[in-house]
Image 1 (tube, rainbow, N blue to C red):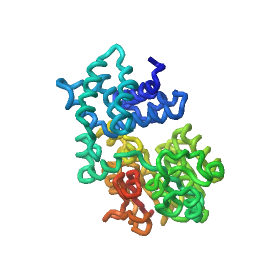
Image 2 (cartoon, one colour):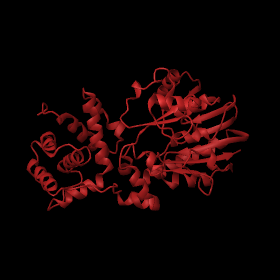
Image 3 (cartoon, rainbow, N blue to C red):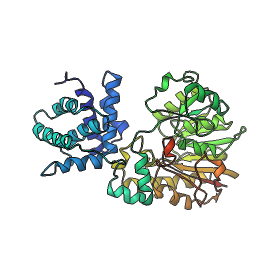
Image 4 (cartoon, rainbow, N blue to C red):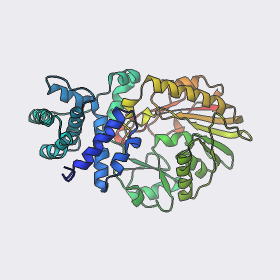
Length: 409
């Protein structure tokens, strides 16, 4: 059976989905099942299938339930295989006969006839998915009135965003790469673009970074040699931004492997920073900084358009745990800023507990963010914060979800 063309990537997708939905792993953690496939196309297919299942899980299950007299258990292998089959047909446009040939062997020794019958019923009935994914009820309730636009923003994987080391080259490199630019120093290319084949990769002229993820460092302005601390810095996008903007950067992170990636990124781009591997809850600086950027560890629900598993694996417990950590981190970071200096707090989370609630408890003076601080099309909130989500700038491919606040010491 292993010789059936197309079977192995579907087997890998099945393993990835099991790891995410049953064991609570991230897609990145589960990716080993796909990374072991020899062909790039097979690895890409496995990841695409898993991603589409997670993006449209509620709607795929509704289709399956509409074609079965007795609902399959949520963790039944037949349900998981049917999810993969439907995602392949409805999202990746694989012909039904090819879906059957490449996915049903996953159920050898199991209910193949049941799965085949359900799939046949749905294909005969010309089943379809809605234009916008349906969110799990608990998630939709959490996100409230923002839920419909966020759901619309996660209907498809995001484009590729690059951050330029030299923003004054935006026009030139945009033309060279046939890219769109939504702000100085930013380029956007179609998803699926091969990063290492792009002009300027070997020269370190840019790095991958979502447009929204670049806003926190931009809010600190030009460094002019002043000292800045980047907390939870790895893998280094904001560190490189700050270094390129003339700051004397200290990059702090607790994870040695992630710090290794940061150092590799610095070496590729030719930028410099002092790197420190330590826990910010225990580490003490020798002197206060002119600015501190705290892009705090969080649930990362704002990355749901590129990491759709967060929709299913993040709940109240994880949100509460992250909010407690963020409160402790911002309390320490607030004491490391020189009088008159700036603290920027950010999370890539869509949860109020990890954004507005943390900002409200900060003891520093709010420094409201202005519209002219932001890329065109974005506006600060009434409180002077930034709140982005995947449904924003829909005509340009959306954004990651971020909360950002700025303070003065």
